[in-house]
Amino acid sequence: MNYPEDTSHMTKWIFKSKSEVDEICLKKYNDFKEKFKDHNVSIPKYAEIEKTKLYFCYQLTHFCEIKRLKSQIVECAIVLYNRFYLKEIILEYDPRILIFTCIILAIKLEGYGRLYKMNDFFNDIDINLDKVLEHENVVCSSLDFEINFLYTKECIFYLKSKFLNYINKYINKDNEIQNSFENICNQIYVNTVQDCLKIIESFTITFTYTPAQIALYCFVNNIKINFNIVNADKFILEFITNNNQILFQKLKNKIDELHVRYKDHLDLRNTFDDENTTRQIGETLDMCIDIYEILKKKKSSKKSKKKKLSSEDCERGEAAKRVDMK
Image (cartoon, rainbow, N blue to C red; front, side, top):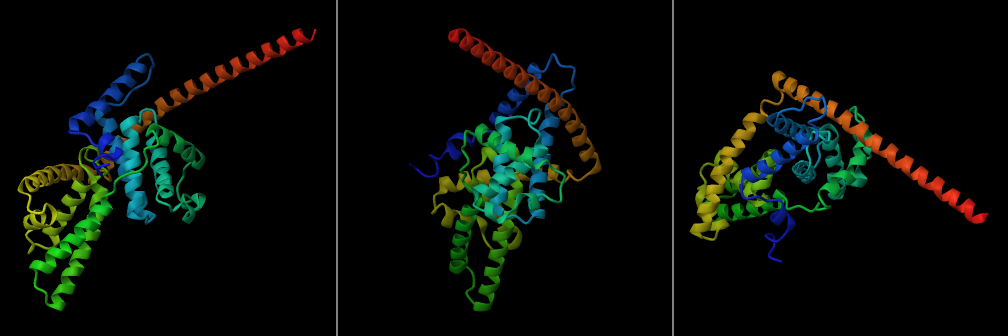
């Protein structure tokens, strides 16, 4: 295997363009509308669905911050959430439940399951924990149990080590100054981890940029903000691409693209606590709840029919046995 290019993360979950991701989501939306055309129910517009999906990913991150979960758990939960809604649609699956399902799965996948008692962990919110846990299998099945990911944190750790090499080579080595530089480097590392979590909230960014590209963008952006005496281009060219000009230019282009995309994401993200936005999300969710009720009734009806057929089969079987005994 040519790691990491041959991993499922790269081959199945990274797309060439935003339009490919949009096409998948729009097709799911149109298919759902067609399926529900005979029902007397309002279906939210596609843009409203996409905004609501992003809003609840933001809520997922916010909840994790309150609970002070480790960054790798948060990243895992965000990726689970986004992958699930690439396969499914919030018109069928309630994001108010799914965000907590993805958090619980992430805690387990990252090996921290024994550290948390679920009832205590969720004791300060009004949530049906049984329903949250029921959706674990729904999420895993939808993803075909592809629940191993490439993370940004490993990439950030690598970038930090390379950046320390850059400092040692090009920056003054006076002990007092060097200690100060290393403190700045540590701060860049911490800020980069947090920025990566924000950027992967963006649904399309998650599926169009690799974890390494996202980590590099966030790291370099924090260098420019916190350590402006450093030549960021020189750092990338010499210490990341090993003076490969073609690869350097490709990475520069990706960084420039990501900067625009991230700015757009932050502009939208910054509206999520506004009264007007929360009202719009609430209206969209109200329409979704009406749809959930219809789906629930249809599911219950199917179960009743199945149970009835099973009961009739049993009765015929018992009747046949009685005939044989005679």
